[in-house]
Structure formats: C-alpha cells, structure tokens
Length: 71
Image (cartoon, rainbow, N blue to C red; front, top):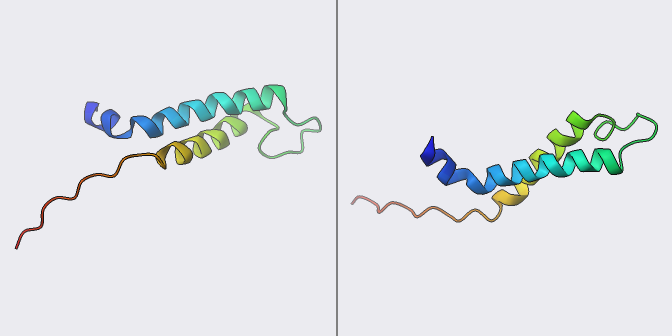
C-alpha cells in the first residue's frame, strides 16, 4: 500500500483537489434549471472534476527509469 501511495501520490492529490473543486463549482455556479448533466447534482460534478484533476496532475508525474536491457 505504501509503495502504491508513493508512486501515485500526485494523481491522488489531483483527484482530491478535483473533487473539492467540483463541489465548490456545483455550490457556487451550479445549474439553475437542473438540466445540466454535470452540474445539476453535486456527485456528478465531483466525479467529473475528480477525473479531470487526476488526469491533469498525472501529466507532471516523473517518468520511471527504464531497467537495463539484458543481452
């Protein structure tokens, strides 16, 4: 578990930040008519922003070193 967290901490941070941003977007901007698919419910907004945050933060993930090739 610790190895997983060490490897993916940046993506997990992006997911958490996206969920928080999605909640505040729903709360402050939202959808007046209720017809918007993403912003009509807080769960939809949080899931969408979590995915976007995880993808955005994972762009800055450092590359893993390649293992040496065996001859």
